[in-house]
Image (cartoon, rainbow, N blue to C red; front, side, top):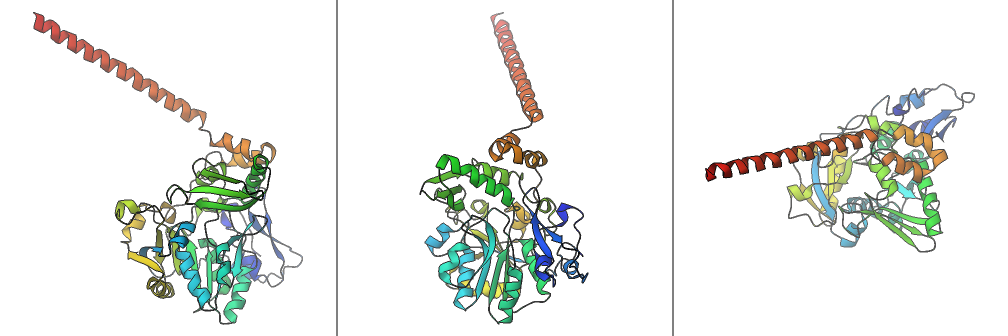
Length: 404
């Protein structure tokens, strides 16, 4: 049976949960809120399937060397509502128009992020937009296998580790399966997300019923988190000012495996990889309009065929030199997040102190850094004073020489 020796060895992909013939594996949240497999040893028959398909122990075969594109949806409304360029919507619409099904991260009525299945275009809005919380895979891998068995097109969108888990679970390639992962910064704790929503209830005097992590009302690069409450009040803050977003972007609340992601620098477990083309204003300044442009990695012939089909009418597409990916125009494509120095403290104090107090406390600069800054400023002031004194000395010396 599968054993987790350290937390960074498990991505929570749910492959073992889906494959178990005895259904003796449950995914249970730890104190940080991340799910890990727990095995009922009395029911386990030691078939070894859970260990055989674990993507940490057995990485799936990589796709071809990727081709790199930029692109955006030509429907302005779709592009505005999307986190970046709206490519996912165009891809999903093609699948749905061919009687296929689409899986992706959605949010239920309890504001829980999970992988969901849709089969109609009017449901697509559920899966659009970024959700900066680890999504629960549930039994969607088993559902995918059923859909593929029925000869339907299937489009599965998720993180790289989820796609790796799905491919290992299926054990073979399917002509009508399109896997798409994202350039991932890391997945935040569902528990922290839940506590954040609870903290937002008091000032609004209402529960949150909708969340947008990448609201673009002030522009793509200036995105904001926006919450809508049941009493119709709204909360909106720049991503650099909101507590949850700061904890996420400063790597305080990510899953342990995200700090040692074994799939970084590969980006080839899916047919397609989508992300933001940050830095486009430096490379193609004429394209930049702050509405969102996607970076697209095409990793397979299936992925290329689908991109070619939708690029004829639905998206504007352009080729990028692959070196740009290496040069850091989306650093999360190549590098794992570095854990925040106060991460352990945050989770140890979270239960007793609450998210607001604990979060604000750990995000403050360590005293050592503050003192270092103060000493540097003090030295600079001293140097400036000496330079002024030296300048004045030379000035008056020159005057005295001239008077002689």
